[in-house]
Image (cartoon, rainbow, N blue to C red; front, side):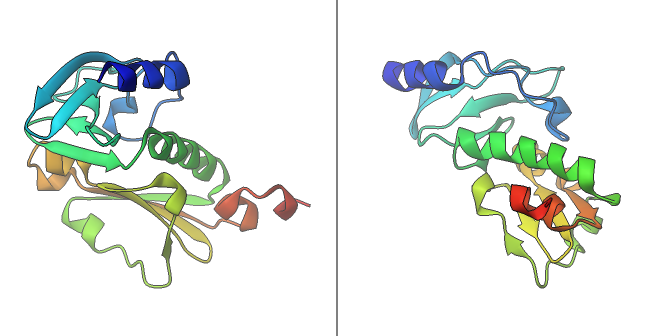
Length: 173
C-alpha cells in the first residue's frame, strides 16, 4: 500500500488541474492521504476537494480513480483517465459551437448511435463518446455513489471540427 501511495505522490503529487465540469470541480490538487482497507483491498484519498461534497475522491485497490460516498463509484480505470477527461472537457468547451446539458432521465435520451467511445479517458462510471461533429460526456458517478439517479448528467459538445474532435495538430493546418 505504501508503495502505491509513494508512486502516486511521485507521479501526480501536487498536480493542480483546472476545475472539472462535474463533481464541484474535482480535487483541488492531487495528493495521497488517508489510507483505508476493506475486504477489496487498500484505498487512499486522491486529493482534497475544492468544495464541500458528500464524498471523497479516492484511488481504489486496482488503481481506479473514483468517488466514495454511500457507495464506491469508480469514475475512470486510472488516474490518467481522470486527467484526460478533465483535459478533454476543457478542450471541447473551448471549441464547441454549442454545449447542451441533460440531467437525470433526460441524460438517458442522448442518442449515441454513430458514436465511438473515447478510450483515452478509460471510462467506467463516467464515459466520453466521439461522433462526426460532437463529443458527449456521460457522468454517472454521483448517481452511483449517492444512490441519486437524478445525478446522471450528459453534456453534448456539438459543432466541432476535426481539431475540436481530436486536437490533432495536423487538423489545424
